Image (tube, rainbow, N blue to C red; front, side):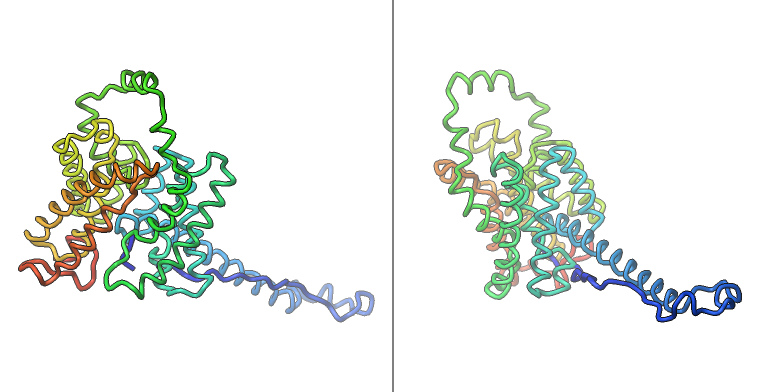
Length: 368
């Protein structure tokens, strides 16, 4: 999701060609036998083509780096390598969703570049991470017909870039995933994807419950599933892969993520939540995001660790309040709990002794 974006794609439409003014039959024989070197015009053409190929290669690499960095920024990782590992982890749990996430990130970044938004922010994935989440949401909650889902992803991802630019001026703090929530819910509230679940016959629900009985290991794995649910994937393996991706960037931030998700799941159990929701990670993903946000933006201290845990618990509690409300509308509450709680935590800078925002937010290790 956020800290700082990729290089503007340059297109080369020039057509390379050469013309020779001398007539074949009027050329002296020495022109064919005296030298093995090609004519100067051909050498110039070859150099021009080589430069163009180098430029295109660099442009493609920049576009790929911006896309993968955007995936990392969903969870505060300003790293193309971590973003690539996240994409691979998503493919383990849901290959189609991984493609949609990459498409959303690429489209959002390209849109930002096309309308002239800040180049550095584009390179650092700040205009792409909301688009990645749009792709995830479109894959799960959008139309089942793939071409329509692709269109939804591209249109929604493009819209997040424009909204990001507006929020940058309107907010005095990071914009978190507000753009994703606004754009995604505009569509989801109309389509009401969760209504079909609510209307499932009671006999089918009972049969499903029997076939999916919850065991101890399901509870143990629920924090990892909560991590994967940040990207709308229901997979402990994907969650483990994402934790590994975070660990590559910052081991302590990985502790924040896993600890936050665990606290969220525990709050769900204390609140008497449906155990199915807990083991499927629905109580963990907002908490993981909130805990990571504190670890990323605040100077590492005992107070920051306490705030990280408190934000995780508060995000889970707010999720418990919003879930029934949005469920009655046939929609998920997405990452609204995380956005609300983290915005409040950010404002505690200087208000509580020991809580101080980092001058250059990165990770608990570098914020110390």
